[in-house]
Length: 545
Image (cartoon, rainbow, N blue to C red; front, side):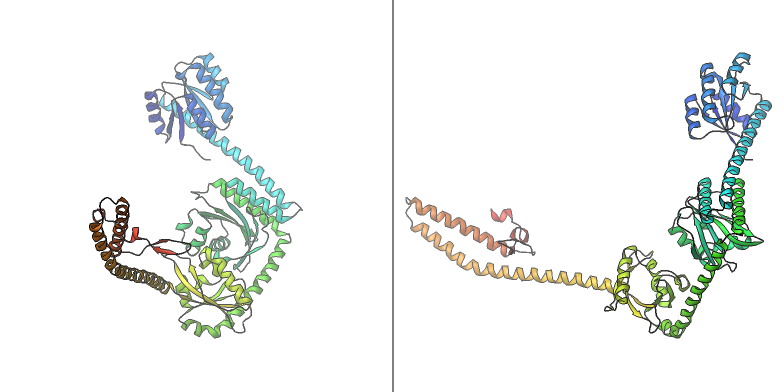
């Protein structure tokens, strides 16, 4: 029975709160205070408290209405209401009890009597709540048992069972997993989040929690997967799918574990209460009875033979690879052998270094898991080109990792001599090479820009020098023409002024050409571009004046 430790007190009397806290502290109880009846009414709509102390000093009418409202919201068995009154008036007490109050006590709060009555009501509510839960659990268990023993599809029954457990315990995924007696492979036959799941084989080497629960034949609860030594080697996989806590309950027949009910939580579960443990183990026992005489056991045997065949083929392939082992291990390049499913069945030490994992971790893992997600499509196209006999070439890929910069690996595909269905990947870490090449290209660009700028400055200087001589001659001739021209000839004066203005403009352009410091162009006629003097040599206002 779960005992409650908090009591809600509705009062405006600070002194009364202090006295109640002092008395209830002796029973390890604490108070949560509300000053108005509206506050406690809102609280009950969110979560029903086990016990409410209601001070009648808030007003006789308000007290009766609050009792009635709380009782309608919480029901008779979910919450106890104790009203504190100044005087024990029979008529008023009857009205309060009729409105939903469970008890009436004096506001003077006699310690022994008050503490005993509060504790008694809390025990009564705890018992009532436990009884209600047990009744509910019994109804659900009856429903599950009826589903499992019905002559209809056992697989559908197991799926419905998984969904009921997931709903009852608020778990993200509940699976029913059968295990081989050898403890090496399992078969997922139902999953609450996938109604189509019927026979998914899994390698139990990647599920140490299933192996442990099957071996010990007792429930296994891991409330924090990150702190579990058992799950240390598979923790990255659990983090990838967001699992925070796990719970497993063995399905046993005649002292032999035939499977487990496997719960995975995406929100950390602090603890499993006894009721939840009993509920899950009862379901596991019901599943064991249902599985005893159905064809599903035969299916497991057939799947076992299939798994053994695949395992033998894999072992055979590994034996054939042994003749290349010394060559692979001594190779300077990383080498990985893929089977048709693109899973790695062999990796040499250099490949393990490049991919940042131990050789044992790479075995059986899809190679695409080692790539950045955006690179998976390109990798599949590379394998497709190889399969269709196209020219094999080296392609750069970004490797997934925790490094602050991308790791670039050059990969090519090759056939493994006569080994049908197996592909050899040859890889080399070219991160530094690509970075050097990138810096070289950038340096070349800067060099070209510098040469352009130097050539432009030299051309501009030559043009300024060559144009300056005829311009000087024009200025001299213009000055001589002005001295020879008669003053009253206005037209000639205007022409000379215009010649002088344009000549000054040419002189300004020549001065700017001789001071060009950077290379900048602008659009001209059509697609042509010319030097942008405004940016290449900004105007000096003092010089222009």
